[in-house]
Length: 308
Ligand code: SF4
Image (cartoon, rainbow, N blue to C red; front, side, top):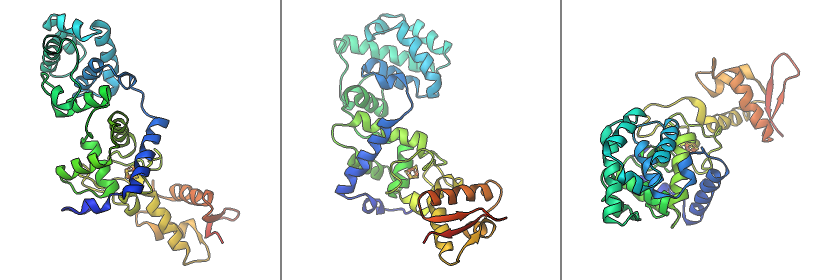
C-alpha cells in the first residue's frame, strides 16, 4: 500500500462509482445483521443505542436497549426520571462508565427544556447535546433523519484503505468517504459500509465467504495485500483466494496437467496443513465450477488441467 496522496487516483471514476454504490446498497439490503435500532427512525431510541454501544458489544446491547426503552419509552419520560435511577440501570446492565448514563439523562433534559421535546436534526446541532460527540451526532443524524455525513470509523478506514488504496490519512479518508456516499442516503449508506467492515472486511477479511460486493474493484483483493491501518501484518489467506486462483491458472498454463501434490507447492510456499490439499481441492473445484479448469479424480491422484 502507498503513502502520500496516491489514493485519489485509485477511486473508481464517475460511472463505476455509481456501480460501487449500488453494489454495496444492494448487498446490504439483501442481508444484514438485524439490530432492533436499525428498524426504527426514532432519534431517542437511536441515541440510546449509540450511547450504549460505545462501550458494550452490540449483541449485549440488545437486551439492555429493550429494557431501557420499556422503562423510559420517550425522551420526556427519561428527562422526568431521577438521575440516580438511570445510573443504577446503567450499572445493573454493565454498560460501562456511569457518566454516560448521567450525560444521556442530561441530554434528555436539554431536548425537553431547550428544544421543546423535538430532537435537532443536523450533526452540528446534535453535538450541542451533553455527551454527544461528532461520531454519535452523525450517527443519529444519519439513522434517524437520513441527514448525516459519511461515517469514518476504524472499520470504514480499513475498507477504504483496502478497496481503494486510500492512504492512511484522516483527511483523505474523510474526503473519499464523502465522495463515495450517495447524496441524501446517509441512513442506508452508513449502515451498509459499517456492515461491510463488520462482517466482510474484518481484520481477517472474508471477501468470498461474505460475498463482498466490492471484489471486482478492490485493490487488496486483486493484489492479496490485506494489511490495513489497524492490521499491520498480513492476515490469514482467507481473503486472497483470487490471488491463488490466478496462480493456479498461470501455473497450469505451463503444464499439460498437474496432480494437486505438485500444483500446491507451486502456488504457495506454505502449502500444507490448513492450506494444504483440502484447501486446494476446494479452490480448483471453484475454478471448475467457473469453467476454467478440468478436474480429473479418476486415478490415484487428483489431476487438474486448464479447460480447453
Ligand atoms: S474484497 Fe475483501 S478486502 Fe476488498 S473490500 Fe471486500 S472484504 Fe475488504
